[in-house]
Length: 90
Image (cartoon, rainbow, N blue to C red):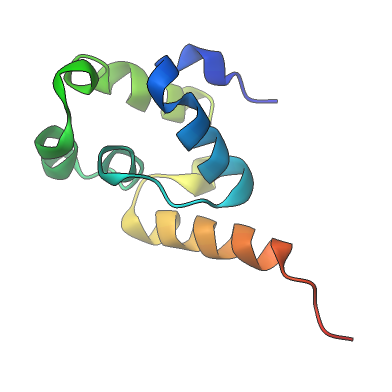
């Protein structure tokens, strides 16, 4: 079980929903997950600007490695989680 409490409170649910259900994230969190430093910095508000290291550190140490690190990983993670929810036709 992942410890989402190590993340800043205002993004815990967003990241939990992404990892567990494949719910797409907002711009800042998406940029972090996609490992896009330029967009992460551009989209960070005053609070997130000071939390970037802690968020990336959490992903590095806690999150499944397949769920982050590039745009491809992000899109594949969402696609995989959404397909898990779809009931196959029999």
